[in-house]
Image (cartoon, rainbow, N blue to C red; front, side, top):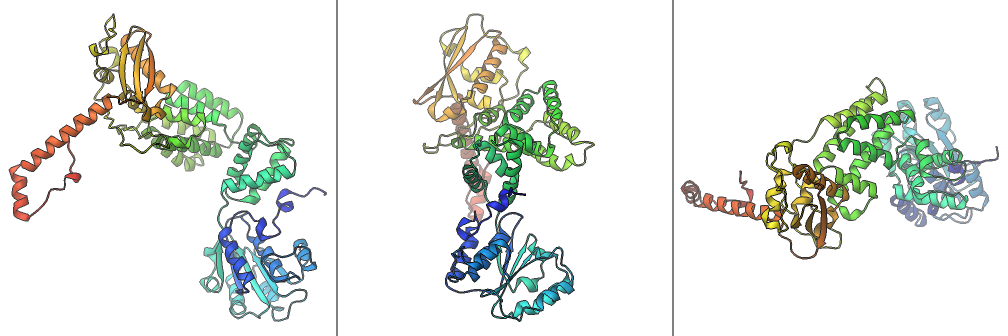
Length: 526
């Protein structure tokens, strides 16, 4: 077999080739360069983050014929033998297949003898947690007082299963998950070297599927190269992994936002035809809900346009509820008669429930501007049904003071971000065909075509006329209903607190106990 898989072909040969794990490399590099070596090392971490690779490079540093340093030459007989797996003084043991105490005793029989080929005899025991209790006991004495030319390196994915007596005799290093950005950068370098054309989004999906493991990422890249026949595209990688595209997630959420059960089930039927991994589908849904929720709070992050649109479809409460339903639904999928039916019920659950708490608009600021206090956005009072609302006059006046925007808003039935946007606007013109609104520049990130369309639809239902909404951005101070509500609330709070301070009972308690009134802790009710 002439082809060599990418995980072996691109296995690091020196410390500088490793991706991530800088905290471990710093300690090992300093120890080698200053000749401050311990007799036992433990490398712990999930699969594919570099435990055995790090151990082999460490063994190469110890036995390089040029010098003992953190930068082995890579060309001497010892370095080449270690790379080829033929170095006589490097003992690699798979503890999963040699768990018996007899195996451990056989291994330790030759510990007392000096190295045959290099400076140190290195015992690399992989998955060391699989050893039996008797094997650990047999290893313990040698590990406590090893010969001077013997060094032990243990690798494990489950350090908690090791006896404390073993752990206490080792220098312990916990290798971290490799961040997706570093995995993507390494995959891009490999694709460039292998002359493979790839879409950056496709590599990002591979990195996300690898879940912090570079080896898994390389295996998936190998699989993707075969599946995509050379070049990597996001669509084909998603098909291979069973992932949804953001377009498909967006369609699901748009049907959910519209409360359109028929359209939702049509989308689910199309989805079932592709036989996806529904756990991955749910993971994609969770990721999109998370990104939309974060964008509502931090619009300066500028995610994709689809995520921005999704953020405008739902209130913050909606997103939190749907995220929680999806999160709990992950374990429910395994209990359902089939994953497809379980996912259908999960979407029906989202369709059936809405938050009961009232929505307060997030503070939306562009990144360079200094943060301003959030606008006070009171929830609308109990709405009259749209059908019972009095229509606008047959001939609408051009002067907006015939009809106040603040008085009109409670009759429109707006909620969530749509209501927040409308509250922060000022009406400057009203005709039979158009409503002109002003929006302060600091609230420009709230301006979303979907929200404007919802305001238009509410006005059209209320008036029975094909009104259009035109929202202009202004740098001038705009006196909006939100500001008026805030002023009214502040005045009400001030009056209530003054009345409380002057109440005889409160003054008596203050005089009797030499007490003070903590005004900040007081809540003023309706």
